[in-house]
Image (tube, rainbow over all chains, first blue to last red; front, side, top):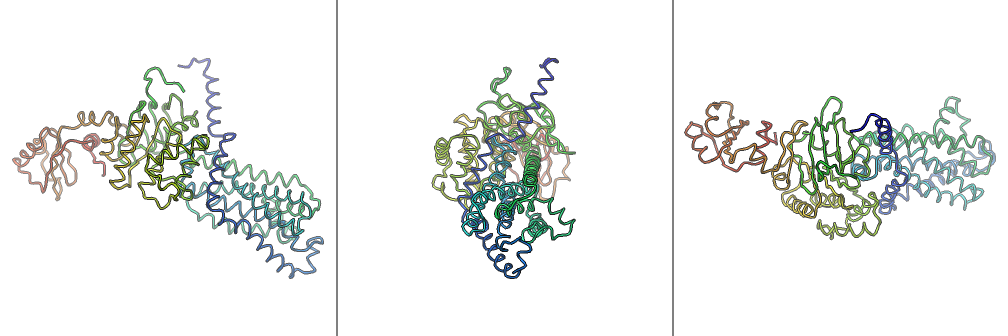
Length: 281
Length: 314
């Protein structure tokens, strides 16, 4: 039996142990990334279109089509560059959002509720936090991969004006993926079916592209909408991505970075908390 | 990991183990021990608290109160280390359907921190042991239920755990697949693995378990080897009388006179006795006219009936 004098340090020790049990392990989450890469190796052909080709098709279609329509007025909006060059870096950020949110939707829900392999993983030395950190890291990595391809295309076509800028754009896509993937994962782990996704994608994700400065400047929106827009991550990703592509100075650069990071970090913590709550009943 | 001095061979020790979900008590203060190398069973109907108990042992369900030690440690505080030495097979399949049979094993070995060469060796060994070698490169989805279950067990053994935990391992399997699985489990046990399983099948518990606890309504109602339980709680033989028109009208005094004890079910009367044939003769003397009857040796089913007044499938 524990003596009274040693009860307090014992309690502290067990509280520390309990925290260690709930927190992510420094390295174990990497095995979840490894698992997802093994899955990706089997089905990468399927995702090449959505991750790589589709954004370029959208860019070509909108850039050329809308570019003609906007015509000489383009310069008023874009500050001198062509309309394609104006929307291309923004589309890169918004396709990072699209890829990250869909990767954090069905693939995560399936592993929680349908094939249920997450239930098996939390019964190994990995804990719920390791699973979420690994899953989010994989999503961010997958977006980085697609963004590298996109940035390469923009560099070759001269839309991105410098290799440094192109590298910076990849980093912005990674941040944008983090800012969307983590909160989306937190949403997915609470769902029983995929009905909630239809709602979320139609009402939030898809409209965000239009209200985040992708096709026209946010300043054209009413003031309230502008405020709302800056509260979401995409506007920050678009602002950074565009400035890096065009080589124009960007004001409040750290504010954008911090906003994106904040969404990602809060989303990750929420995902860990909610996932743990669902798995550890 | 230190084993306590009192019973050095106990791998799992629970005292007053309790789990409450809101208003519902799933496990109400149970005590049990699982010893090194034994085949231990939790027998009981659905909802008795077996799965919740398994989840607490596996360190994925924090207990409400009581003490629980696995390898002498508390799973709420040392969950990761404990889980590293336990293989868990869930009631529902939790395999990855996009990966091949072999990849399912390879990926899982990494979660236990094994290096790739040892995982590959172990994976091939397990595929052989569970007769899955010729399906190694196939995807999991089209496999039969029995094969999927064998793969799940193989996967849980990738890191050579000290304890293997199986939750209703043969539910939904056809008789042949069940027997294949039983054989595999017996082999594992002979190899020294401690096995804990839950089941609501009496024959499964009787065939496999060295020792078991009978659970009903969140409590343990009996404990012992299948033989002990039958000797202690049931008579030698059982006479079953079938009355398709119901049993309510039969006089209790008549039933008392036939054997040592009786249980009245909706359409059957089950009579525990020393000699079933003799009891049947007495039943006819008392003027009972069953549609059919049979005499058999007592089983765990009768133990359960005796202890709870209900049959398992009700």
